[in-house]
Image (tube, rainbow, N blue to C red; front, side, top):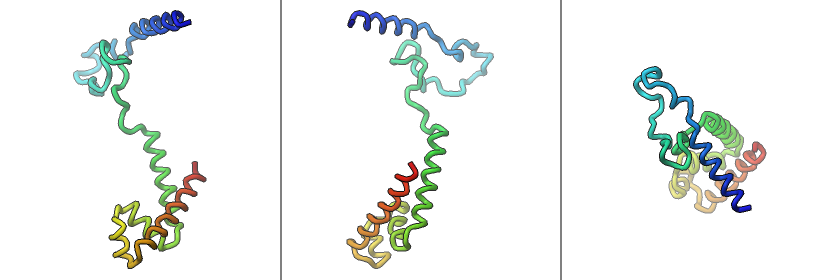
Length: 133
């Protein structure tokens, strides 16, 4: 069984090594003087585990950006539906990045009260997100 698996793997490696993408077949002068994507972002034919594949995936795929925007809108709507005290605390802490002490001082509340309000707000937003997913 092991020998069969080894032969299959070596045959696959040999077959994949013979494949060349269409972009590599085009003449350099026909496509233009500069490539549209920097070639260093891909594995070369002789190096890397997967020739001509991305060294690392592009930073942001359009689908990911669309989903992130959709989730942000769901979170924003959930925050807007919170009671005023919870909405202010979660906005200052999680959206604006304020420290707990700054929130307590600005709102004139105790640290314990700030933590309770933040916990309740996060729990409600999390419930909305769980329902969304």
